[in-house]
Length: 377
View 1 (cartoon, rainbow, N blue to C red):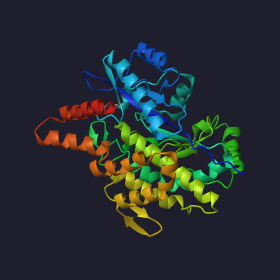
View 2 (view 1 turned 120 degrees about the horizontal axis):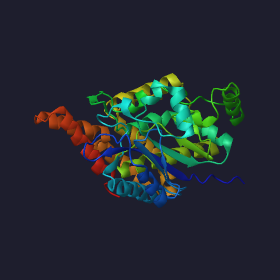
View 3 (view 1 turned 180 degrees about the vertical axis):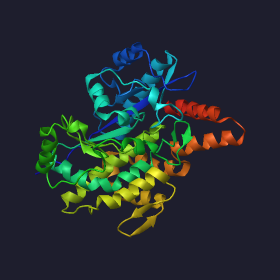
């Protein structure tokens, strides 16, 4: 008898480090700060590509509630240590006004190589994201579920948007991070593979040609993790509010289990061409939740709230089994009050309406981000 996967969950978050006085990015944070974080968090915190960033990772968790407790501890600890150095972590995918051209890469071999390879594209990577891992040991099962879950990735992105500003300008997009990130090679929706063996053959072509060292340099929206037996979702912005992050992670975990459940019953989710799913990907990048997404089964645009209700119904059995009905239902709260991008834009526009100068209005946005990053911990 085949044993069902455990569908364990793990979450990685990347934060900007800002100077509390200037609200700008800390392009040269003290080395002591990172050392103190590492001492307290024992392998769950690490430098990121730029010195002005820091990354944390939960342990392997059985439920979103367990992941929430761990992630709250990680956010709280980074905030406490950073605060002793006059800094603060910000959970947003772009900084409202920072300049990318004055940021400095972290001096580690991997990052130095990336900086050399990517050049100007790499120097613009002043962006942060959230990655969610779901544990699946069987490689062919992971490939099959990777093929199917791509349909739902734009929906998850829409619930997380936190990057409307870039270099002091309102971009008009809810997730400008996507625009920056997709300048890199090997990004976007993943290819579809008939088997794990076919996937490995394609990776081998790139490795043998000297184009990449290994599969860690595939930066798709969802990918087979090269380090863990997990399916890693990477499309989302980082959520400023912790409970929003956990809701999205729970939805992803439940979607993976739902797709497995269909497969177990000799069913599967219909595979749609990348060109179609990319239309929804663009709509969420541009509009977030505001203008709806295409239901390709119905062949028309459907209100985002209605689509989320359908997803909640689809994964109801899975949420009950995992024990995360409350976390999944929190998606309705996100829809009702908006994402971080909505709040950032509202704060900025309200300040301008009161006669506040643009530079000061942007600092007010940073102040909100600093406070909300540690709210509810």
